[in-house]
Picture (cartoon, rainbow, N blue to C red):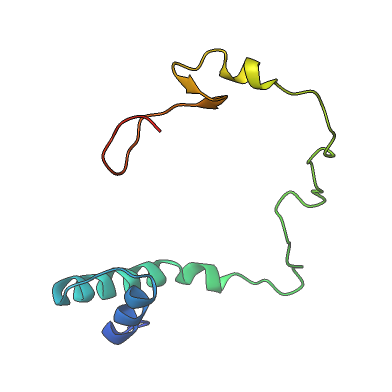
Length: 103
């Protein structure tokens, strides 16, 4: 197996990605990443002379989003109609931070 990445490279990548790896994990990750890179070697053996790079595999794909158009919406009353709890025209939900209770 070819050594594409060193343990120093793996530590640097892990630090950049904010992944904590101990010494044993760095060794194993180095082996794993080098094996993955080796498994991609057959791709480099294709004769790609004259093959134009593609931006997207579907080719002439264009923006399929619709135009933003203003349309009718719920009234405040309709939006709150099925709310289990409401107060002063707002949804009242259980607090997940602090002392608890509804907010």
